Amino acid sequence: MKNVLIVVLAGKETHEGMARVSNALVIAKEFKEAGYNISIIFDGAGTEWLVELQKADNKLHDLYSELVDVVAGVCDFCSAAFNVKDALKAQGTALSSQYMGHPSFKKYVEEGYEIITF
Image 1 (cartoon, rainbow, N blue to C red):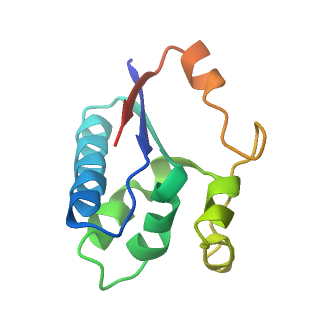
Image 2 (tube, rainbow, N blue to C red):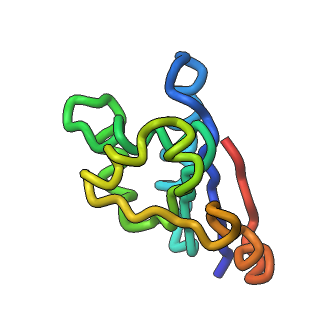
């Protein structure tokens, strides 16, 4: 079975950012449905999306809800830098800080994951 890691770095301030996160979720769904070992990490400005995606009135909420089980990490450091750490903690989102406050990507490389960034 193939391993795929999708890293969401896109911010939420532009239409282009919304398109990138939308594509990331659609592609993650395709891999999940095909039986791939799929994981998603929200890093950098992408941490802002988790606050939005968990809102029921967000256009991407339903799609995100189908994939919440494959969210492998949300950057602790970046969530603070983009001022969403408290909101994420209030939502019960676990933050990743394995390497210098950030999620570790080394283990994914060592486990042979294909990495796709958005």
